[in-house]
Length: 188
Image 1 (cartoon, rainbow, N blue to C red):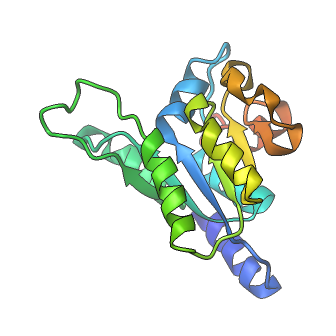
Image 2 (image 1 turned 120 degrees about the vertical axis):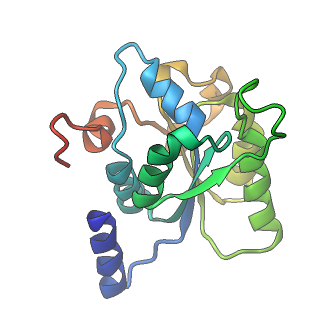
Protein backbone atom coordinates (compact mmCIF):
# COMPACT_ATOMS: atom_id res chain seq x y z
CA UNK A 1 0.00 0.00 0.00
CA UNK A 2 2.97 2.29 0.59
CA UNK A 3 3.78 2.35 -3.13
CA UNK A 4 0.21 3.26 -4.05
CA UNK A 5 0.12 6.05 -1.46
CA UNK A 6 3.43 7.42 -2.76
CA UNK A 7 2.13 7.42 -6.33
CA UNK A 8 -1.09 9.16 -5.22
CA UNK A 9 0.97 11.87 -3.51
CA UNK A 10 3.08 12.29 -6.66
CA UNK A 11 -0.10 12.59 -8.76
CA UNK A 12 -1.34 15.41 -6.57
CA UNK A 13 2.05 17.14 -6.54
CA UNK A 14 2.48 16.81 -10.32
CA UNK A 15 -1.19 17.62 -10.95
CA UNK A 16 -1.53 14.48 -13.10
CA UNK A 17 -4.94 13.44 -14.35
CA UNK A 18 -5.83 9.88 -13.29
CA UNK A 19 -9.49 9.49 -14.11
CA UNK A 20 -9.81 6.13 -15.86
CA UNK A 21 -11.72 3.35 -14.12
CA UNK A 22 -10.64 -0.30 -13.99
CA UNK A 23 -12.99 -3.25 -13.64
CA UNK A 24 -11.42 -6.59 -12.71
CA UNK A 25 -13.28 -9.89 -13.12
CA UNK A 26 -11.57 -11.51 -10.12
CA UNK A 27 -12.67 -15.07 -10.90
CA UNK A 28 -11.48 -14.82 -14.50
CA UNK A 29 -8.17 -13.23 -13.45
CA UNK A 30 -7.42 -15.88 -10.82
CA UNK A 31 -8.47 -18.89 -12.90
CA UNK A 32 -6.63 -17.66 -16.00
CA UNK A 33 -3.26 -17.25 -14.33
CA UNK A 34 -3.58 -20.38 -12.18
CA UNK A 35 -4.58 -22.64 -15.11
CA UNK A 36 -2.09 -21.17 -17.59
CA UNK A 37 0.44 -23.54 -19.16
CA UNK A 38 2.89 -22.15 -16.60
CA UNK A 39 0.78 -21.05 -13.61
CA UNK A 40 1.80 -17.84 -11.87
CA UNK A 41 0.50 -15.42 -9.25
CA UNK A 42 -0.22 -11.73 -9.48
CA UNK A 43 1.03 -9.38 -6.79
CA UNK A 44 -2.13 -7.32 -6.35
CA UNK A 45 -0.33 -4.27 -4.95
CA UNK A 46 2.09 -4.21 -7.88
CA UNK A 47 -0.81 -4.79 -10.28
CA UNK A 48 -2.72 -1.85 -8.80
CA UNK A 49 0.33 0.40 -9.19
CA UNK A 50 0.74 -0.85 -12.78
CA UNK A 51 -2.88 0.07 -13.58
CA UNK A 52 -2.35 3.51 -12.12
CA UNK A 53 0.95 4.22 -13.85
CA UNK A 54 0.29 2.62 -17.25
CA UNK A 55 -3.41 3.32 -17.71
CA UNK A 56 -4.00 6.34 -15.46
CA UNK A 57 -6.53 4.42 -13.34
CA UNK A 58 -7.87 6.38 -10.40
CA UNK A 59 -10.43 3.88 -9.08
CA UNK A 60 -10.14 0.14 -9.62
CA UNK A 61 -13.05 -2.18 -8.85
CA UNK A 62 -12.37 -5.86 -8.12
CA UNK A 63 -15.46 -8.05 -8.56
CA UNK A 64 -15.78 -11.42 -6.83
CA UNK A 65 -18.48 -14.05 -6.65
CA UNK A 66 -19.64 -14.03 -3.07
CA UNK A 67 -18.40 -13.57 0.48
CA UNK A 68 -16.97 -16.60 2.24
CA UNK A 69 -15.47 -16.13 5.67
CA UNK A 70 -12.49 -18.39 5.01
CA UNK A 71 -11.27 -15.99 2.29
CA UNK A 72 -11.09 -12.92 4.52
CA UNK A 73 -7.28 -12.73 4.12
CA UNK A 74 -7.73 -12.52 0.32
CA UNK A 75 -10.36 -9.80 0.68
CA UNK A 76 -8.03 -7.86 2.96
CA UNK A 77 -5.15 -8.23 0.46
CA UNK A 78 -7.33 -6.95 -2.39
CA UNK A 79 -8.42 -3.90 -0.40
CA UNK A 80 -4.94 -3.18 0.97
CA UNK A 81 -3.65 -3.21 -2.62
CA UNK A 82 -6.02 -0.32 -3.38
CA UNK A 83 -8.94 -2.05 -5.09
CA UNK A 84 -12.60 -1.38 -4.30
CA UNK A 85 -14.04 -4.81 -3.57
CA UNK A 86 -17.45 -5.71 -5.01
CA UNK A 87 -19.30 -8.96 -4.33
CA UNK A 88 -22.04 -10.60 -6.35
CA UNK A 89 -25.25 -11.03 -4.42
CA UNK A 90 -26.49 -14.63 -4.10
CA UNK A 91 -29.28 -16.38 -2.30
CA UNK A 92 -27.87 -18.05 0.82
CA UNK A 93 -29.42 -21.32 -0.42
CA UNK A 94 -27.25 -21.19 -3.55
CA UNK A 95 -23.87 -20.42 -1.94
CA UNK A 96 -21.29 -23.02 -2.84
CA UNK A 97 -23.51 -24.54 -5.57
CA UNK A 98 -22.55 -22.23 -8.42
CA UNK A 99 -19.69 -20.00 -9.44
CA UNK A 100 -19.97 -16.32 -8.69
CA UNK A 101 -20.54 -15.01 -12.20
CA UNK A 102 -19.84 -11.25 -12.07
CA UNK A 103 -20.14 -10.44 -15.78
CA UNK A 104 -23.54 -8.79 -15.58
CA UNK A 105 -22.55 -6.91 -12.43
CA UNK A 106 -19.55 -5.36 -14.19
CA UNK A 107 -21.54 -4.50 -17.32
CA UNK A 108 -24.37 -3.01 -15.25
CA UNK A 109 -21.99 -0.97 -13.10
CA UNK A 110 -20.23 0.51 -16.15
CA UNK A 111 -23.53 1.33 -17.85
CA UNK A 112 -24.96 2.85 -14.65
CA UNK A 113 -21.93 5.13 -14.33
CA UNK A 114 -22.41 6.27 -17.92
CA UNK A 115 -26.17 6.71 -17.55
CA UNK A 116 -25.67 8.83 -14.44
CA UNK A 117 -22.98 10.84 -16.24
CA UNK A 118 -20.40 10.10 -13.56
CA UNK A 119 -17.12 11.83 -14.22
CA UNK A 120 -14.47 9.48 -15.62
CA UNK A 121 -12.49 9.29 -18.83
CA UNK A 122 -12.18 5.69 -20.02
CA UNK A 123 -12.63 2.08 -18.92
CA UNK A 124 -9.94 -0.56 -18.44
CA UNK A 125 -11.33 -4.09 -18.24
CA UNK A 126 -9.41 -7.09 -16.87
CA UNK A 127 -10.81 -10.36 -18.23
CA UNK A 128 -10.57 -12.69 -21.19
CA UNK A 129 -14.27 -13.60 -21.04
CA UNK A 130 -16.17 -13.06 -24.28
CA UNK A 131 -19.31 -12.03 -22.38
CA UNK A 132 -17.88 -8.49 -22.26
CA UNK A 133 -17.49 -8.16 -26.05
CA UNK A 134 -20.70 -6.18 -26.57
CA UNK A 135 -19.69 -3.78 -23.77
CA UNK A 136 -16.21 -3.38 -25.26
CA UNK A 137 -17.69 -2.63 -28.71
CA UNK A 138 -20.07 -0.05 -27.24
CA UNK A 139 -17.34 1.66 -25.20
CA UNK A 140 -15.07 1.83 -28.27
CA UNK A 141 -17.92 3.43 -30.27
CA UNK A 142 -18.43 5.98 -27.50
CA UNK A 143 -14.66 6.67 -27.18
CA UNK A 144 -14.83 5.59 -23.52
CA UNK A 145 -12.63 2.48 -23.78
CA UNK A 146 -8.95 2.37 -22.94
CA UNK A 147 -7.97 -1.31 -22.93
CA UNK A 148 -8.97 -4.89 -22.15
CA UNK A 149 -6.21 -6.75 -20.33
CA UNK A 150 -6.29 -10.48 -20.93
CA UNK A 151 -4.90 -12.52 -18.01
CA UNK A 152 -4.06 -15.35 -20.46
CA UNK A 153 -3.92 -14.03 -24.00
CA UNK A 154 -3.85 -17.49 -25.61
CA UNK A 155 -7.08 -18.53 -23.88
CA UNK A 156 -8.98 -15.26 -24.17
CA UNK A 157 -12.24 -15.41 -26.09
CA UNK A 158 -11.98 -15.61 -29.86
CA UNK A 159 -14.67 -12.89 -29.99
CA UNK A 160 -11.91 -10.33 -29.38
CA UNK A 161 -9.93 -11.29 -32.50
CA UNK A 162 -11.54 -8.45 -34.45
CA UNK A 163 -10.54 -5.62 -32.10
CA UNK A 164 -7.32 -3.83 -32.93
CA UNK A 165 -4.13 -4.13 -30.90
CA UNK A 166 -4.74 -0.60 -29.64
CA UNK A 167 -7.50 -1.93 -27.40
CA UNK A 168 -5.95 -5.02 -25.81
CA UNK A 169 -2.87 -6.35 -24.07
CA UNK A 170 -1.92 -9.51 -22.24
CA UNK A 171 -1.00 -9.56 -18.57
CA UNK A 172 0.98 -12.71 -19.37
CA UNK A 173 3.12 -10.86 -21.91
CA UNK A 174 6.75 -10.90 -20.70
CA UNK A 175 7.20 -7.18 -20.03
CA UNK A 176 3.87 -6.89 -18.23
CA UNK A 177 4.13 -10.15 -16.28
CA UNK A 178 7.56 -9.13 -15.03
CA UNK A 179 6.08 -5.97 -13.49
CA UNK A 180 3.09 -7.56 -11.74
CA UNK A 181 4.14 -11.11 -10.89
CA UNK A 182 4.39 -12.12 -7.26
CA UNK A 183 8.07 -12.55 -6.51
CA UNK A 184 9.51 -15.33 -4.44
CA UNK A 185 10.75 -14.26 -1.03
CA UNK A 186 7.92 -11.76 -0.55
CA UNK A 187 9.96 -8.70 -1.57
CA UNK A 188 8.16 -6.33 -3.87
